[in-house]
Length: 537
Image (cartoon, rainbow, N blue to C red; front, side):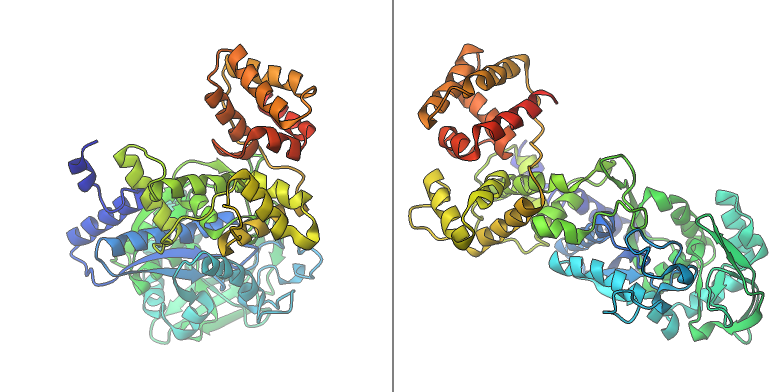
């Protein structure tokens, strides 16, 4: 690829740079101000935030950074729906006496952990904590505060006045007739405190009052009875909220949002809101990008209420913020299965990308530019000046497992010096200390690390099989080294290629310490087990 072609690549050559340019081009066509271009992510507060929840923020943040790189002012809005009602008690909190609060706004439910002013604040704080640890900058909006301060008041009025048109759009898009009979607004019942049990049937634009009846609702297969109360509510009070099928549009116009990604599970709501935004509120909806869900190893969508939640906090126990952002940013489309056992693979992959960024590994110009851009986005455009010391996660996890607890760092430093990762008498720096901490957490909680998937040819499999047969009788490091060399030679493989295959299986990287001493230190049986698992894939 020529230098001229590289120079014409948008920004850093990533999907986020192309999306930023697409946003700019569209906003120019719409003749809208480019003085501030806001992206948005939704922040749930009804249950424990999972890995996918962070994806919204990471991707929209990267688009904001790409816009800045193109010379435009941009910021990420983190909009927390803490006005939402609790639909189900999340698994893990079944004993927290939350069942009685089903249907109540999460901002009005006591925190079962006792450390925040409400259940909603507690749950939203977990995701905000993850954003902070990843270095993502954002402007925070609490829906509870937004409604109390009247930031959506003009939009609420317009939607209620044009409720009939809203209802027809919903019916045309998804066949739901509810909002042809009732207005797209929930009032909190002044008598029983429920949110979703009320039905608003009229609006007086002169007094800003809605009139409702508490009739009940079925939520997640459970009927929540209404108390039968009929009342009125001033929309300026903040004691109510728009339905999802209109609230997105209200947010977009009130906060002037120009980009928001969304998961395919809410595609219908986004489509409805796009029409409401343009046809009712007369605000062209933001650019969108649709992404797929993260699945657990059983193929089920990771959910904050279904019991298979995988939180950012779990990841950050065993892996760096940059490896977590790599998970989010390396690919935008396509469903991915993700488990805790993938964390070491992403740590090793991020090291490989860092090698490209600092010129230690050469690829074609286009891919080099893309990976360098991805590296910077994973560091939220604040990359380090120098590369870190790269030690395979697998190797560190093994070393901390066998190290004496009273001198762990000294033991690991000595071994890394012996293996050539550190120079003689070189101390462990802050970054490597953190890596050791991740590996220590891992070794305390898990027995083994999932091997990197390697596609073995017939000759590769024959060589690995021969190595397994002869490894039992090799009783010192030199014999093990020769056994590996002979297994390659006897099966028509270049020894360097076979060593690289073994490093990838055992360490998750194409190179590493001298294998003879490492196999002895790791234990021949452990190595044999890992090789057998690789053969059986």
